[in-house]
Image 1 (cartoon, rainbow, N blue to C red):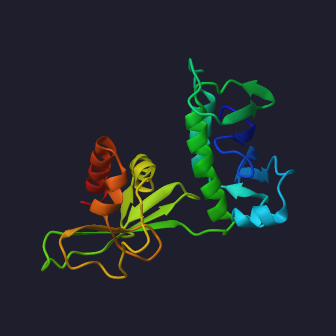
Image 2: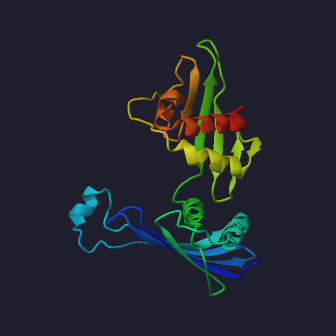
Length: 239
């Protein structure tokens, strides 16, 4: 193991206040897992009234904190990130200040990789803390109206950093990352869904809200390359 303790101070700066926040993660290795102290604090809200925050969808008490152990499956990713060489230019407006065993490491040029890691590990914390459940995506491909195509279910556990299709087939985390980077870029518009799989031929998915959407419509918001890559990863996982 390359470190005993790591502290990550992550500043989300892509949107202005009241959306900006700082996340702090203090992680140390233990036999029970990766002992984690997590905190989220919204910043620069001094000029906002409680009513204005409520209008933006906040409660006025939106900070978060949690302490516990996350799965050691996250250790390898952490080590790989700390060993990245600096890049030549910033890849995101967000900032990660990282100390490994008290020593500051360079994250410049790798901001986008830290961005994605923070998203993933936050979801792992939410699941471990039982604030949210694992992610579930349903999929059905109908070749004709008469086709009684099976409904497939993909269960994604960030807390365990693992995924399974129909509870039997393990899916690599790399495939899951490829899927999620594109899947939620789609537009799941209200009114363009149904509670049952439509009778017409097509590829349909349920992103976790209990409704079925036609991927031909939802993926219209993607560019050509994104749409081709999404179709490819669909085939790799579900076919």
